[in-house]
Length: 439
Image (cartoon, rainbow, N blue to C red; front, side, top):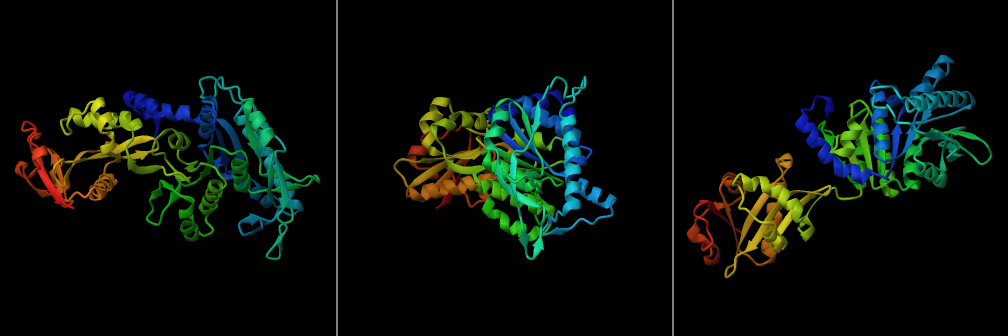
């Protein structure tokens, strides 16, 4: 989404709809991993602007950067070959020198980017404080499969108290892919490892991993919007040694370690971070232990969301008008689909007194989420609830969606087929068509 090309009305609506996320993200800790390729992409200056915006909105930022391509270039300039085993660099003494050189140059460049205060730019007046240091304690990987990794290490501990103190002071904390041992040694680390451990040890609210893809792409070439850690292993097997697998594995580790949400976003797509964090559907892949979308029975807290959902349909004459008082009294009849705190679909079941029949009513789906099968999910739930109540027949009265119900097993009926208690309430002015389905 390019806000520059949005009509003013759409821009205003986008800003209004982003306000719940602005409030939700304030004072939260985000760990954001910027790979070495990300730092060199043409879109990186815009990513810096997006990070500054997050900081200005009260987000506590920990930035972890990588340097893989920068190190490889330094090795090539010396006529040295980069050596890897299981996708981890083998760091001998000469390679370590290149690593330290690359990390130093990238860190300084990053600090310079975050220190810009150019007139008429998104950075004007930002006045950021960026802090880096020896926050990562590391240990050597040692010898695996007979291969000595030498100065390649893994994270042993993150200085949680030190980092949190700086975040409390409104600093942006910068973590490099270097770790230090209590004996004064320096180790080359994978930035994915640093980012994941930092997110876990800091109990971060989010871990954001930048990659070249929009997110996880499935076998059909479609973007996977969300998944659980337990759904990740088949994707890892399919991706093999692809870098996307490393990011996905890091996301799974973070979730298992207690990080609520991990986001895979693209550094190629301008504004991907903002659309991922400030829109309901995002732009990348969300990995979370939580249920992002759920179908459940409605509660009194859902009345406001139901009104917002059904009011446009009532104004069009598609649904019968219901006041707030009526919805509050009848809320136990409703089932809803909730997506990230928003009611996006609903349906109600009204048992008809003096009979073994019920009425399916107020089936509505937010226009932005139609064609996603949510109407079928709610119909199945209503039928399940009806069977639990011992109902034998389900009636529906509709003016505009007759074909949808017929395609799902409802047969044309008439007012004369309605149980007496419901037939007496039939509104002949609406002239609704009656359909029924045996359960």
